[in-house]
Image (cartoon, rainbow, N blue to C red; front, side):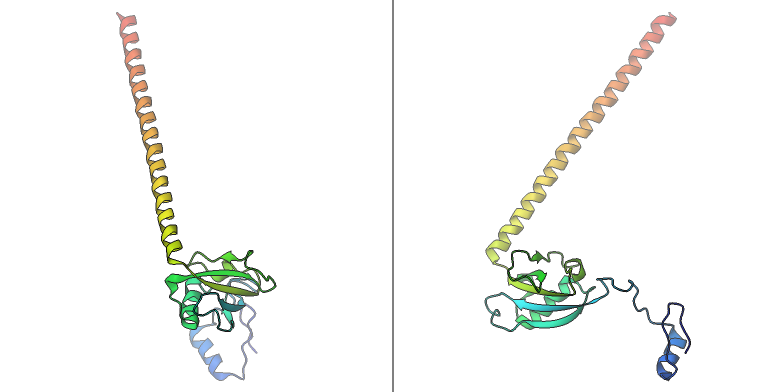
Length: 185
């Protein structure tokens, strides 16, 4: 049995696999290293707390740790019939009985392994109240405006300080020129 540089053993009994490896090279397996949570398969129980689907039985799936939160939301949409835009996902350990310690999975582009710390966990889908969602959007917009105003004010203060520094430098040059002119005459 030939051995690959990374320790993968190729079986002689599988002629198709051996031919594919010969033609295309070895598959990229375990690129993140053994035991890395991002590459591991996670056992996830998907539960719905949304009013229209809370009666449905929780569903267990093995998901790759690199799967994004957005993909899990799409999966929940198919399973529980709740639009992605109206979902909020939380993760908690299977051993935890209450939701107080659950972590909000707020970044859709992050892998689920960023939020999941156990190989087995619950992902709980809640329905976003539209009034709360609108209020959160308005609050976020207000924080953005406040940040922009603070940055603008800081930029104006820096610009004024630079102008004062330049003016002081010009005065010093003029004073030095006058002092040199008066001593040479």
